[in-house]
Amino acid sequence: GALVARGAPGPALVRLAGRDTDLLVIGTGGRGRLRRALWPSVSRHCLAHATCPVLAIPPSPLHAALTHAHRRNALRLRLDSGDVEREFGIAPPGA
Image 1: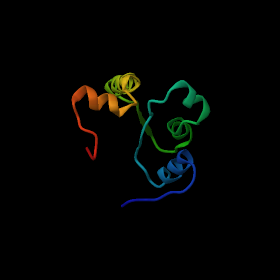
Image 2: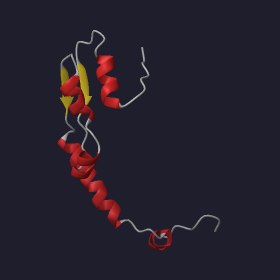
Image 3: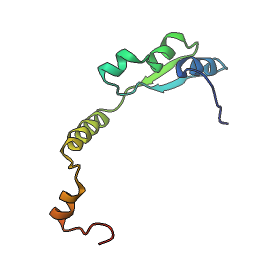
Image 4: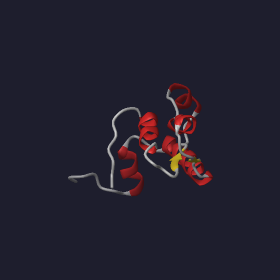
């Protein structure tokens, strides 16, 4: 069944995993240096405090490559939709 827990994610997961849990599986997330410095890591909290074994799964290299490509391409997108309409011959809405 599903469980709903309130509170900070790390302590909530550790508290729930304390109930006869065989294994806690958690993703480590692909956060940048700034986010890692500003926000505590849920996976690190679980690894340090859980009473059951914890399996921390890092993001796949493919995920990192796709995220990088998405960020790079997002910078190239034009903000003016008129440019896209002119370039591809798309009529603006209502035309």
